[in-house]
Image (cartoon, rainbow, N blue to C red):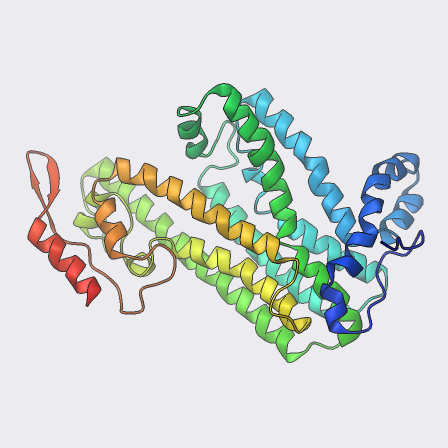
Length: 366
């Protein structure tokens, strides 16, 4: 492996396909990761020297160093507070920090930035939407924690959960939030070849990302409105205007976007990072490249977390299993929305009428 000379932060690329080669664009710069902490310590007292170090270090390596540095912080904070949502509080922020870093680095080095400017614009909107939604649900309140961690702690031993915290919650999740932004590094490299003007693909991909963020916003808002209506209904025993009693009694949202997909917000969220990855593939004229690791890991995470979430939800709401049979998990049902079967209530117990449930399932199959 040819190690680039000191101060050479980017590889020499002659074609777009060169920008996606791991051996050319990543491997030669990995030694910088080992020496970076010592160099930061040596120049910590001089802003100008730190600035010089920043612009002369490969931007992918700098971002990875930040992700690794956060791991012990997340771990110590979670173990001291016995609250394991430390990464969750930064989930909506860190990807944009990494994207902003690539954009800033390009500006400081005088590289074409129109493509990166489009990425940071979408990324900021993504962060604002997700941060706001997390805040209004109380995610930043003192002591707030994802309910799934408490459920998981009750099912495994403390020692095993500590190992899980080290390997997954603190380490893997921190690295994942860096990995999903690695296509931005590839797009930074391709920008040197495409020039300072926005291309048609830049416009198409950036608009597609914005539309996906908009889809997550509408899905989150619809779910928020449902839970607010449910709280009001439970407090007053009166059905709020515009809502259906059967759905509120059911306990989970099944109308609107949620009649096409059980998790439309999750589906759009996953698609966002897949589209960013595909943008990098398109610009490098390839069907895939090494940055697929981030998008694929994100998909795996959502598959696992959604399975666990639905397992808990199905235990809490008996009708959820019927909803699972009727409505797809992520990809929307192209045949149209599905209506949940009518339920009857006897002695305070809600029970699905077998004939109507079977008819609803049969309707879906047709």
